[in-house]
Image (cartoon, rainbow, N blue to C red; front, top):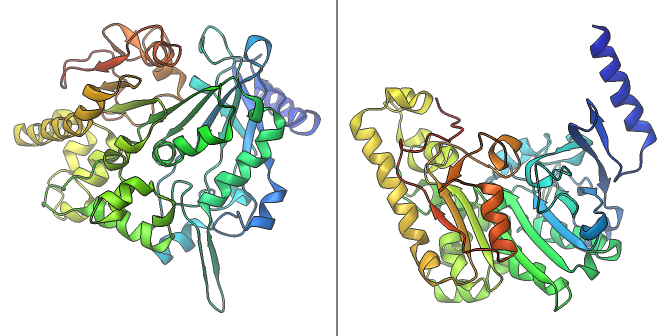
Length: 400
């Protein structure tokens, strides 16, 4: 009990004594906590969270040789594609900074430990909080007599960038735009735009972690995810913010919200980190609840040992479809990189145990951190594709 009180007292002390970019840590620097910064100037441009609260980010300053380098990480957290789900979301940390934790743990790619994050530990590292429900791409407002919902993800992105530019981002020598899940999807839609804000001689690249969401039929042969994204694009006024070359090329322009269609039009160097058996896509694209009304997949979703041979074959087919969608990028992108492992995981760059450690996931004996570092700094070609499940013994599976 005494130990717990001491930790709590230390955290309380940190909350009230340090500047936004200063570090508070529990157990002597083992846990890096970074304070939230609100963006008051965002109100003038209407760049507000779903509930009308101000957007925010967390900045931990770079130092030494990394003081002029910047890493921006989009937070993830799903989407809302109808009024009810957005109204519900606006009352949570996914739709309002009022409900967010004011301190965020920086680990993995955001760590300031040179041993655990050798390539980016001393960069300026920023986490962009996610409160719009559309991967930072919407630009619309819904209002009636009792409620207003702000679908302003695109404006939030622009407001945060404008806030960071005078803090040093505008003079960056190296920069990496990254994100996890819905935040990983955001990198596809803002990668080239990010590069335009920075000096022409800067080295600018982008990374998506668990953001390569497939346009795939579910087990009942319905395009559940396609419908979800279509309704999201329509509700939040996203189409005008999608890649123009992509929307002009496709008969259904809303499909450009899917990375597999937008990727070919991105000119900035790109790295794709994804599991071929991504657990979110397993549960929401391949086997969404609407496609498994009788629960035939319930046990398989909870424990892979309970999957039937046919179910495993279906999962292997999903992996092959993902690799097929990535094949043009693998074959044609000279400056691109990838790390597609066979773990039942989702988001592997922010967790220290999956980013870099003694027992971290590996492909060809290379960790995720090493693969991304080799790609960013052009030390080596970095296009790693794992063998099929269950061959990889290094996985940290979210499903046992």
